[in-house]
Image 1 (cartoon, helix red, strand yellow):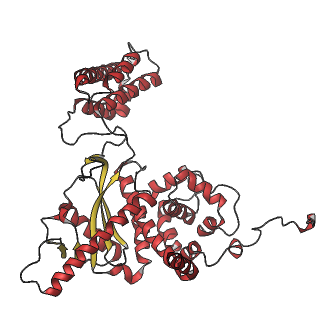
Image 2 (image 1 turned 90 degrees about the horizontal axis):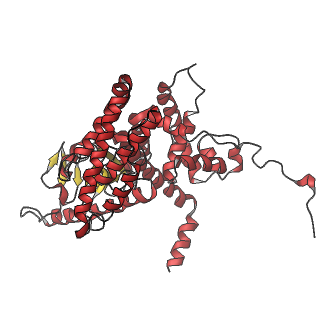
Image 3 (image 1 turned 180 degrees about the horizontal axis):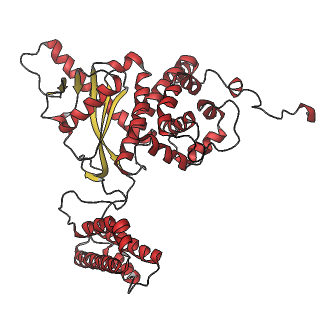
Length: 435
């Protein structure tokens, strides 16, 4: 049996230029070669100041990590770990030598998102559209809305009341004053009384328990207002107390209800689904080209608008993203009431007009059938590109996550086109397997 001598051991696989050790035809490396990194570095450098704070991370590194996070459906914590383990990720972010350490702490991505804001992510999305060239300049687009769900639990009034009580007790403990009563044991028993509130024989008991929880929460708020120093009360906690009082006073049939304490701007949306009657988050409009399925416009709406009222925003964003307005927008029946918006003709599935020729009837029918192609696009955005549940905070988090999911879809389409161009054997193998 032959054994290798110690002198033949290779001490460092990535000792030379990292790009020389990798496959130059890898789609990720091809993508890194066409992304205008210099433009991002020039634009985003405006958000940095010299000689203030710790040295910043390279802008290409931060933008690359955000793109990889969305493309690979990874969290902030996991993407930095995968970057350390994957040399192709490092080359994508501009590294010339293999790095053995984490590129940054995961919280650096949070700070970078806050730093560049919505305007910075708009530029990243526009870059993903421009990579497709003329394919993104089609005159006909498909438009639809979906729900961008927030990372919140199913809201109930009793659950919110219990959370308020726990927050108030924690606040009193943090400031170190003795409460007259914390109600911890009573809240535990009231929680059990509310568990089966849908049962016919338990409704009265659950209603009384909810009323008692609200009384306890109001009592704790009054006590904290008496005991806390005035500067703490007005500078730090007054807005929180007003939010708690609004939550405690709202009724089931009220409008503009608050469904989450940490996401007060999330609202309830009913899309008519049998398996999920209500979803909590924000409504998102998505526009894609009719033939090439490239996403050319996305908008997150801060209010629950009727679908037809979302058209001006999404059409304006389409024009801003690619520099060209759409001539026709094909929608479903939920957009009834609009025939032309901002110079764009709105096409809805309906009976053909008597004046239409046979060609016009067939064209409209095909356009409306083709509109259904946007439904699987939305499904992929949710399952593959982190749009199923939004973990970013606030309304600005809705905009950022939606823009990055759409950018990831566009970049993934570019990557797949490169893959089939350089690796045609994969397509041949799939064809042979089907036969």
